[in-house]
Image (tube, rainbow, N blue to C red; front, side, top):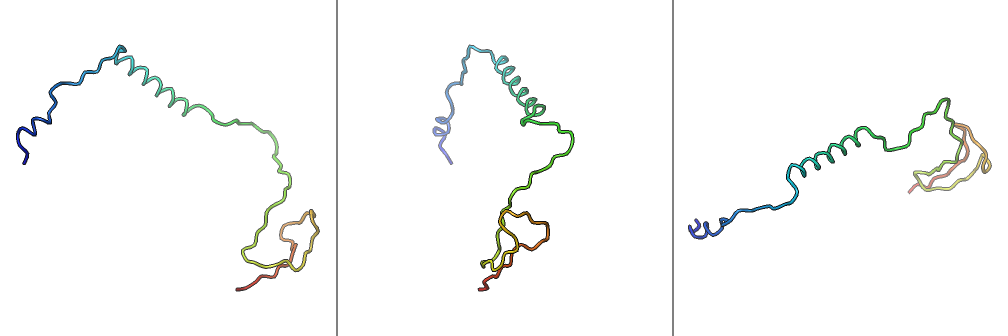
Amino acid sequence: MFRKEALEHQKWKSTAVLLSSVPSWLVFLLSFTIIVSFILYITFSSYTRRETILGEVVMQPHPIILSASKSGYISERYVEINQPIKKSKAFRLANYFFI
């Protein structure tokens, strides 16, 4: 398919020589040491601050965000602003728009 001259022209006429003042075994040893150190650090070190707590952790009450899945308006309110409410107690009556 190709001429013999074209194929011979693509061949290298010389060899690649890498010259370095640092021996290859030293480069390998240094690279290996860095990689092993990194793997050991990832495996055995901790990344976050950890605390040991004895006793009971109690969360302070805080406001929550409520959102409705439909558009509408609140027609009656059964609690006052900043008044705590208990679970499953009604606190408002909403009328929804149906489209």
